[in-house]
Image (cartoon, rainbow, N blue to C red; front, top):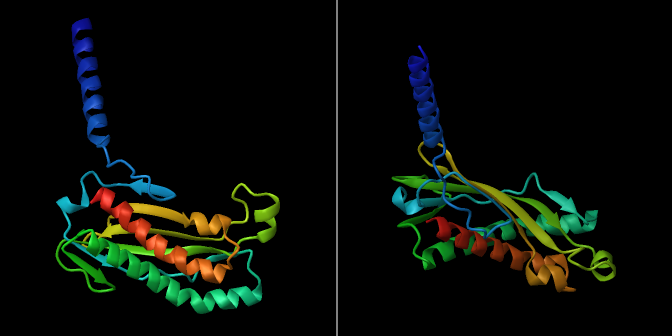
Length: 200
C-alpha cells in the first residue's frame, strides 16, 4: 500500500512539474528602451513576420497637464503634425535599419504581418515654476504615449509598451512646449524603432 501511494505521489509531482515547465515558457527579455515594456513573444519577430503595418497614433483620449484653454487650442492644432511625425520617424528608422521586408503605413495587412497601434495619452506643457524652484526633473515638458503590436491574422497581442518622452530638452530647456513637442514626437518614433530592433 505504501509503495503504491509513493508511486502515485511521484507520478502526481512529475505531472505538476511538467505542467509548470510547459506554462513557464520564457518570453524574450525586455529591451529597456521605453518607459514600460511587456513582452509576450517567445521568439524574435523576424522568425514569423516579414511585414509591419504602422497605424497612425490617436490622441482623442489624451490627458492635458499644466495646460490652459489657450494652450490646449494650440496643442489641438498641432496634434495632427505630431502624430504624422511619430509615424514618419518610425517608418524611416525601420527602413534604415532594414527591419521587415515591408513597412506599410495605414494599409491592409497581407502575408505574415504585425500591426502597430498606439496613442498619445498625455500632453504635459511643463511648469517653469516647478522646474526652477524644485528642480530634479520636476516641471518637465513631455509627451506620453502607449501602444501595442498584434498579430494581424489572430489579433493576439505580442508586445505592449508605454513611453514618456522628455529628453534633455524636456528637462532643461526654457523653450515652450510648442517648440519641444515636435522634437519629442520625432524622438518617440525613433525610440520605438530602437525598441522594435531589439526584439526583431
